[in-house]
Length: 380
Image (cartoon, rainbow, N blue to C red; front, side, top):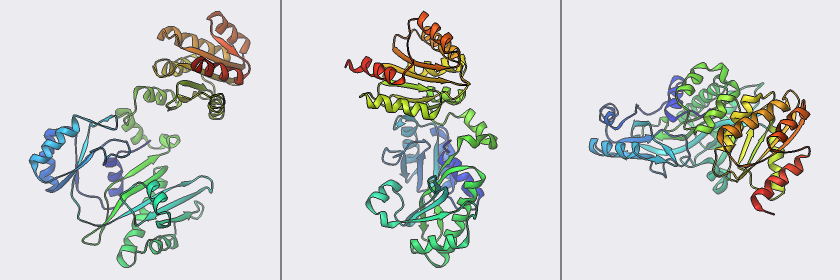
């Protein structure tokens, strides 16, 4: 789960990290009141969960109430990289001396937290890594040991900060680490973290990503998610509702399986035979008819998908339930997309009978099913 900038800054503020004075608005008429609170000049920041917001016109500086009203109206009437702007964060403009980068994420290969710091803030960390890899300081934290003062010293020394700035940086690092733990976060990022004219460190932006598997421990976030789909499209909302893992891709062959490993292997097979996967859709173990139907309807409704490869290995998943779900999804959507099903495991004979009676091709070998799904699109 990704948090909006304003949500992340609320958390930052609670943990003692300085953020600019700001007011969240949901329509243009509220911007004048917001300007009265934060002052002029101010910054209008579209609250959308997409990258490249600034370059797309989603961050604008205003120097008068008239400018603020005009730009707010423009923002609310447009999309930023395909996402409609529904809220704007109006903030005081901060006088910046230098922009820094600071984040904590997880290095899964080392099974440690990793702190990333750089004096090259304000741009994507990926861009920094390519252009100036030597400018990135990496500090690894063993979760069994936790964050210690020597980690903070190593970070400030690596970034070339001393005195009060080093002390303030250490305090912010401590807060970010506590946020990582308290919120079960995968990523907590400040970019940019700025040095102001008064030698303060202020978080001008926030990025926090929460582990979806830990959301049951954060009911306040679950409630927020129910009221706000986080810029998800209809398919992503349905997938979240049923607990599917769904990633939309740019190919033309829909892929659905039960289990992440099997679904990834199915994608590899399609690529091997020259096809382009259009989805990663893992319905998980034990999927019943209703779950299968809901999942397949996501793919059947996508106009960019030309054929569908379904790969099911039935253990706790019953093949007849899968087959019934497939048939019902086709009937309810009226789709004529070509579907190729590899179906083996528990109650497979019953499942195959259902598929045969409804004219749906089934296979026992997933190589054969993947190849036919590719041929249906390429003609080769």
